[in-house]
Image 1: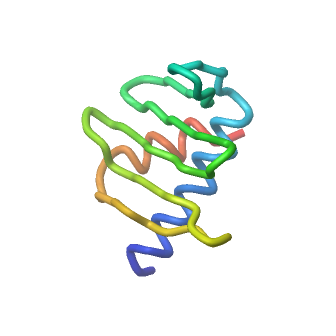
Image 2 (image 1 turned 135 degrees about the horizontal axis):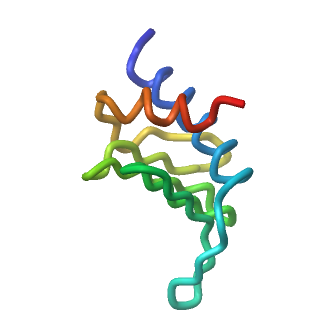
Length: 89
C-alpha cells in the first residue's frame, strides 16, 4: 500500500474515532472536535474537513481541497497501531 492510500485510510479511521468519542472545543471563533487518548490527539474541523493527528509531534495532516482530500503530512510510526486500537469496536 502506498503512503497516500495508507494516510487516507488512517484519516477515515481517525474521523470515525473523533466523531464517536471526540468533544467540541472552541478556539477563538472556530469550533473543532478533539479526541485525546493516551498520547494520541486528533483535531478535526468539520466545516473545512481539515484534520491534524498528533503523537508527541504532528504525524498526519489532511486537508479538503475542491471536494477531495489531500495528504499534506504523513509520518509512519507507532501512532498508527494506537489509532487502530482506539478505533476498534
